[in-house]
Length: 138
Image (cartoon, rainbow, N blue to C red; front, side):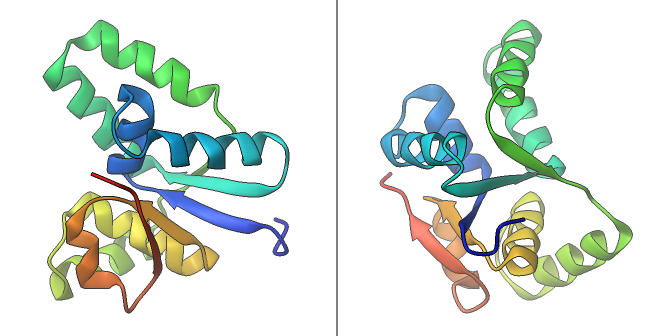
């Protein structure tokens, strides 16, 4: 997987910032461009993808959610499978830290990959001792 290259895990905050042109978009865009050039790897849990899609459909509509899904699928993002072990690890993180269940899957991914967690969500302050967090502006 290229251990010599930096690994990043996106949470929904980071991906939505990129997609919606919010604060933090510039940094996410830099990382995605670096991934396109092979300079780093970007990862996303299927659970996080589901969260982004349901948020988009709830705030807009199904058509917009499908459009967003197509945009995400075109990005150089490696999707991370959700195995029984990942579910159990995420459940443990959710039980012991104050953050959303979907975010616990991103934390597990960052732990497994020794990756940088890219977020602006203040809930991740509770897991800074577990993963490296790069904070996006809010």
